[in-house]
Amino acid sequence: MKFVTFEKSDKTVRIGLLLNEEYVVDLIEATGDDLPANLLDFINSHEKYMKKAAELISISVEDSAVHRLSDIRLKAPLPVPKSFRDFYAFEQHVKTARDNRGLEMIPEWYEIPVFYFSNHLAIKGPDEEIVKPAESDWLDYELEVACVIGKEGRNIPAAEADKYIFGYCILNDWSARDLQRKEMMVGLGPAKGKDFATSIGPWIVTKDEVEPFKAGKGFNLAMRARVNGVLLSEGNMKDIYYSFAEMIEQASKEVTLYPGEIIGSGTVGTGCILELGPKIHRWLEPGDCVELEIEKLGVLKNTIIEG
View 1: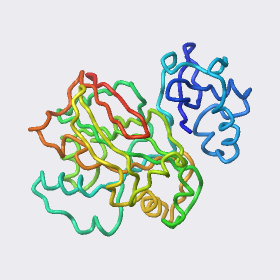
View 2: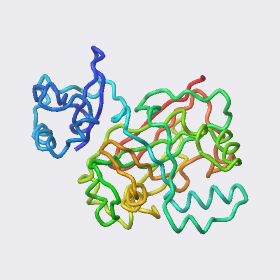
View 3: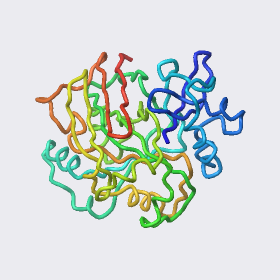
């Protein structure tokens, strides 16, 4: 199933179920308020609500609770997640980005999956405008996958971690590279280079829909990024070095994870301008339209505007 958060023409914000990527079922209207009003609450108790939601897959598109996708506005599926950890799990990206800066690969990267916390209060949705930070001239996109935690747990072993995943979505970890570079020279970060915006969406796909594509530590899902319609990045999630299960194990050591927390994969190989280099494409500017596409997860599109 694919879950969305959307705004109706009367500005009411609802949670919905996507049908054939053409229609959205208003879960509240369709069930008479039997389901929660927001996706965070739904995920928090999803084992209680999933059967009810699944019954709506066969609803008639003529039902008053069903809306054409073109008639509503999609928002970030989780507008305010509980938290956002972003990992660094694709080897090609790490190697190339470091090589471009004249740095060798760090052996510690192969010992543990590492992450940083980003701003879970700056989440953007599909087609939402991204304000370019005024002090940055090196604006970049990052093509990533995110998983959404669906079950509370602590000290979760990797072998059990899949049970704690609700679903997956596309993630764009927008980066002000010049700000990031300067602050990380101090030995901390990234922070200000990242906290202005992170896009997720267009929907959250439940884990059962991607399980058939399991390959290696990831899934055989093609990943692409386009800027102004031009293909710049191509990768595949199956190339991930650390699985989401391994990331969850690391994140949950002596820490409780809760439903509605987001974990990012880090950038796939070739998945950002920093890695591609200026000969391939300049840094992003106001007016640029960035589209991230991941097979089975949809297309996440945003346009840059001046601050």
